[in-house]
Image 1 (cartoon, rainbow, N blue to C red):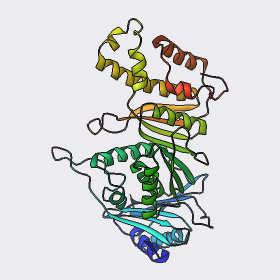
Image 2 (tube, rainbow, N blue to C red):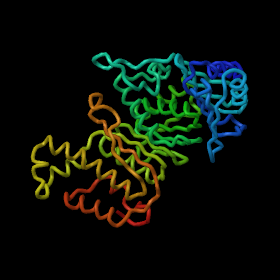
Image 3 (cartoon, rainbow, N blue to C red):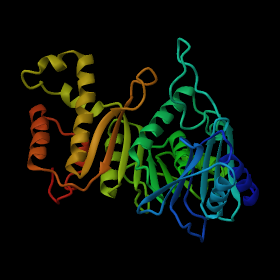
Image 4 (spheres, helix red, strand yellow):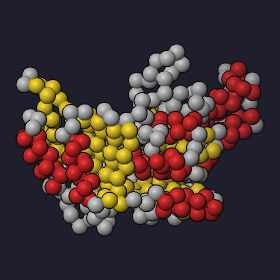
Amino acid sequence: MPEPLDAALTEVRALLLDPALTRAVAAGRRRGHRPSMVRAELRPVTLKAGPHLQISTSDGARPYTRNVAPGAEAGTAVDALLAEPFGNWHVETADATLQLRVTKSGEAQVHRAAASRPPAEPGGHDREKGYLLDPGDPIFAEIGGSAAKRRQVDAFLRALAATLPEELTGPLRVVDLGCGNAYLTFAAHRYLTARGLDVELVGVDVREDQRRRNTELAERLGWANQVRFVAGTIADAVVEPAPDLVLALHACDTATDEALARAVRWGARWVLAAPCCHHDIAAQLRSRPAPGPYELLTRQGILRERFADVLTDALRAGLLRLHGYRAEVVEFVDSRHTPRNLLIRARRTGTAPTDAQRAEYRELVDQWRITPRLETLLSGAATDGTAV
């Protein structure tokens, strides 16, 4: 429910000056206004002179940091920040988390949550890191999802946090391809807006009933103006304007290739895709003998399937490199939570591929006599105008 902005900012002020403050970030802008800075971050520090409040601000070109003493000096500095027309505040204390977003009508949309400790690991030891999103966040009451699904989504968000630059400011256009029930879509919106970004997010799924369901959820959460859904295939759904960030969590088999291909054609700045199933290359390996001396890799069915997984994702990363991306394959969640725990993470650099990189890729696919689906989808889309 929207609240009066002045009252919400008074609550924020009290948290910012609370000795229990751990971190706060202000960013984004209100409709029709522009702050004098693009971002402000506050955190407690301990100096020789005692506890102080550190305030780091950025005008988009360079950062500025100062330490203010508790009491009147901190109060004056905080009041100056609260007077800036920031669109979002995210405040964490030892006891609570508050997220404030200023609506287009000038009211405050506020989410409050008690600070939570993550579940203890077997053996009684607490995890070193908690969740990026509080498991008690109201969005989970709306979107549902098992504990395992929440762990996967939270792990995906951690990879996202490690990918986006710290100094990033909005607006940020995001698309979630093959969004299904939109667990990741809604969680990504919550996380990104908490970072102070002005986010426009589109979820794509082939099923019309999913589009209707997810749209209703967005309306109940009060996010209909920021999160929308379209029905269509990953390859053909209309998404305009082109996104900056492409997400795809467990798009099955060649659906991951379609997601990566669309990201490349859009020229997306960042891509995070967690593949699921690798039937295409596995089928090609079954249909022809392995090149020598690698017959032992594919003779046993289970080994052939696992090798196909590795080969598929290695070739995907290689193709992204040939199309102007720096790509890496990482483990984003523990395998005990899901066996599909690899993530292809890519950042667009625009760097043209070298002859050696082209030759390395071509030698591998020619030796195994395979044609990756992503290569077919990207045929003719190389950054320097030549085919792979």
